[in-house]
Image (cartoon, rainbow, N blue to C red; front, side):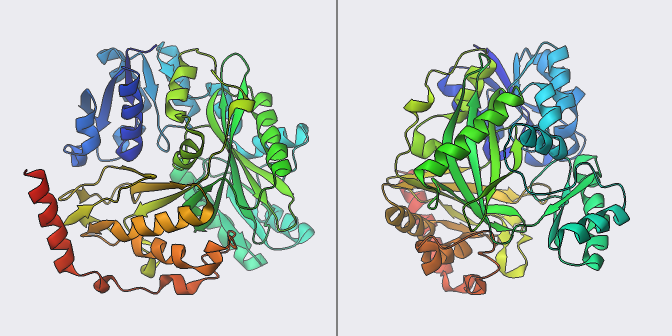
Length: 472
């Protein structure tokens, strides 16, 4: 087992890895930018090192991070998600330095990091894919010809990366021209690769993904599925496990397809295969994410399997200690992303100082975050402040518990998604499972709430009560 792991990331995912390492008695090292010198995740590591320049560049400097790992005696690097998690060059550098990259081999990252190549692999092994271009689209004219031949709407997607960057849905020739230009600019800025491809846009699908673990001896298991259909601008807000609409037969079929793809890609470690499920129950491969994902918590809650610890064990060469027949899905889990955003203003990011903070608790409630009173939300990073994951025995119980937990959640000083998420938990369509990727667009009433209804006097009283309790 590793002696020291450097976590090449920040925020709640860094905290998540530190917790897994502590349970495995592995020393940890954090990296941080000057603007987060006092962040909780920095203090929770055994060691912490400033990287720069600036708030972002240091987290992307592959050679600086590898050299730091060598200097401090770290024998492995965990990349978390985002930043360098899918960077094949970074994985190569780790290999050359004899440092274990806790993730897939660089060859798998190169294959799966290109969505066109991943689609082709899926087609070769018989997994249905959404009709799309065979290779990158080299001109607007080529894109127009494809769209006219298959019919609108179509999707413009970046060949590299994910998270909705470079992605556009278009319904006309004029929209396609603009979308290809702006999509290429965004993809180049985000991933250093402006290549685009097009595919048919499926109206009102469910976004279903299967969590995989694969060891170095060829054993691959899936840990069930997550429904990630509730999204804004193609970025997830709420994740649910298991799906409310999958039959046992379809779960087996899609799970086996995900495992087949992982084997065909010679994939190792933790990853997720993402599908679109249309209104008629037909599924289509979208992409494979060769890393841990933000929403892994819901899968952990219903399987009791620590996915991050499994990543570490696999990277160290240990085989999986359970088979597919031993994976049991227990109840339901919902993850809510508590973002520093203003849903009533186009989800505009909100930065500033946290003036009051009280997280919910009780049975079945898990918080992954790095927020505290007087913490300053920086404007440089993703808006995610905390992840609240709630588990229950039934769907109704899980929704009720999530609603109660959101009511308990006090986070003031910046605008957050908490009241918006609370409205979702009260919506009859959500309660009855009637949602797909069009849910937020078709429910404008979810945006109707008033921050002023939360009394600042109550916030002050709660903060005083907490301070008094901690002083006992």
